[in-house]
Image (cartoon, rainbow, N blue to C red; front, side, top):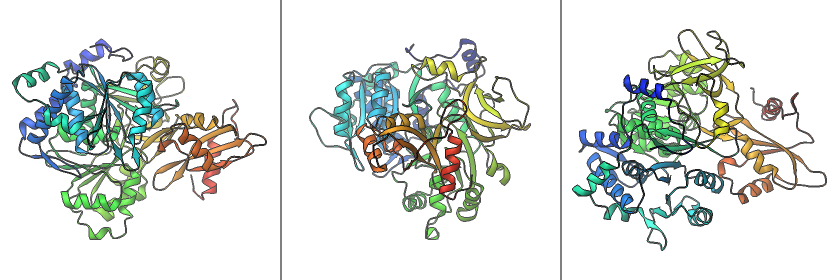
Length: 549
């Protein structure tokens, strides 16, 4: 089913990927059904409220899919899914996929600006969202979004009471049919694996999140090969701590859990004490996460009181891992460590469980999918010799085909021969080992989240007292980077850091876009072409923080 704004794979590429079975030809619904058919009585999912066998999960998913169809959520309709690490995310995601809908994944912290933009792009028919989560009350946000987007016919609240004007997810599951006619109707909704299945937002050099469309084929292939180097199997208990709806949550959590028939555990806390308690209680064997959370765990006072002997392997991605962190994992947690590279667009690489310490500490290993090609190019597009630095580019069955409804961006991000330009600087040696050396894109990596610097600059520059602004990532030992804004005030005005933050909140900025430090300066240094010289600013803030770059 063609979708306006989605670039399909070139016919010759798709035929090659299908003919050679690099694409498995499975949908997300197929993946789920296969797991539940093979291991119906095995425990499948654990979260903060309950446990499910695969059979119980299948029952809830099929009933919810039937209710979605009854609501008129048609094949190919977009639906916003904004839930934290709750079992309801898993049930909703697979139910939407089995009903033939396309899922737009949002994390709990996405705010008005991101949701408005993604709603404008996708025209969603429904929105699945908590009534409240932590300190967030979603009802005012829902009302605000629906004013501008009448396309959202149904708002489905999760873990909420009965409220006028809203549907309740628990009710939809309870009253959903699972008779022969309903199951046949679900079967008839099965999409072609080459169709767009989900959209993941990602930070970038534009102000608003880019929408990354992924097909069933390319994402499931991505999942398959990314789970191999760290050997995820049906014997594993896999824990997701990062947002399950995030790229890492899907690629390293939901996907491999159901592809490999693991026992899957969701934890809705980033407190190291809570994570260690769950590892101990559930006998977790595999933990994919980000360096910031690993750092908190290894530095936890009293870690020895937890029995973490079940933990066999930790996956670290989203930001660089220091050699000190890697060694601390081996020494304090007594488990193996893999250093990974990946992005929502599909490129991925990883060290494996048997690499030497130097490879794990200083590289991201080799490409995980042998059929995806990586190379390094110079500024003119020519491939550089092994070991030389340049931009990392990639093409293959795990790589997306372009951002959704973004022809201007797409014209810039692919080479003439169809390779995706990652924006990362790297070297590839003769044995295929990839070493990342920097970034071309103006983004900030905070605790595994990719955040647009330019987007924050646009928000800050709307303040009446701001003459110039440049936003950078300042180094942080826990999160990798935090957000720092350099601001030149307009003559005769005053503004404080707190007022800048308050202004951004009024504009609907998410917590991920709020600067954590502001430097007020007389002028911002510029490059030869008049752009803010962020290299100088990074050096300046590092010096002020007594941090060696």
